[in-house]
Image (cartoon, rainbow, N blue to C red; front, top):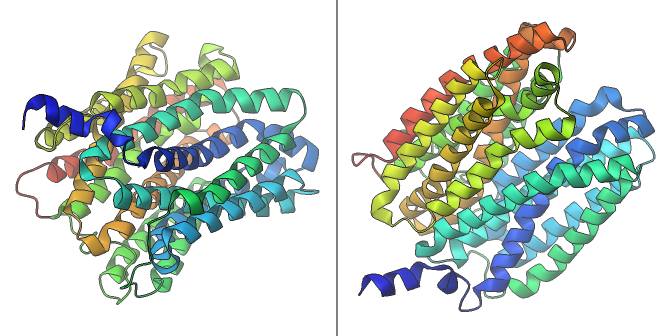
Length: 467
């Protein structure tokens, strides 16, 4: 086979051929719903609090969504086997529709929070089922391009989310945000049965891993609760407890008949185990900029909320651009790019610890771009390498686990950053002094996670690692 024909078989035209375009579009819509719902809602929350009297519950809206999303994403693989991908995806669209309608029509903050929980469940299922669809409907030669396209959707959401949310907030029409997402979710759910034809229920499904899901829920709840409490000692205790419970999930999963994760997902000597560990730790290390970057930039640099948000959004934009750079990398070259990406993330976190406080703004932007490019170079190729090592019976649960592992890492990273920020005075009030301290220490405390993810990524990409 010539080099030209090989490129044609792995190019964008072949990716969208043979009826894959509509399915590809459905997957992108699902990822958009997951990404944009989160970003837009964060922008309109001050308006929600003003109307519903819920300023004290900002963090609960985030925590409820996150717990629902992680549990749903973790269960998506097994549910797709039990109900079939078509029915499961349709149900996910309807759950998200219901959650959006409830938040849009909420007469009080309690109803709004229930709506956010349902949105988290719906978004987690939709994203998880999208990962399953990628694993079972697209040939291995196209996986890097599909994951790059998903990164592109996230990048677009990062740019448009704050803008759309800000426009609705300024006009006092925050409820219309949720009506708009309800309509999109309804279209998604209605299209799923037609666009996912040909997928079938698994004939070997053994049920739902309730014990692991319950344990995971306890761990994620502890971590999410940590992010709502101002006392650093309690926050640190909850984070440690949450991490211990997440480790217990791995232990239980290797000893029960119905697994939540693929075989040996907790074994760092395998591609699967080292890959999930790298995704978890590297995601956790990147949360400081996402959570505290806007406030720090506004306080220390005098930027507007929108300008600060878009500077932080450089991380997502560079992720997207870098993902497209490596979309056509052959299997033999993925190890090098995974290592380059992990190195970039570690270097970017270290640079932010040194530069965010007082360096010229251009250096800060470059540091954020370094972190994002690191994810872009490595993330899609990590996913492809993990999927390539999984047995057929593990592909559904292995693919859906990408969402749960990444979001769990994000929750842990946000909680660690929150505990650090409170320790250095951020929780007592946003001042120049507290912003300066936070600008350094949230990244210093993220470095151990970044280094752990770096080591796991190098192990994942090594020749001695076992499938």
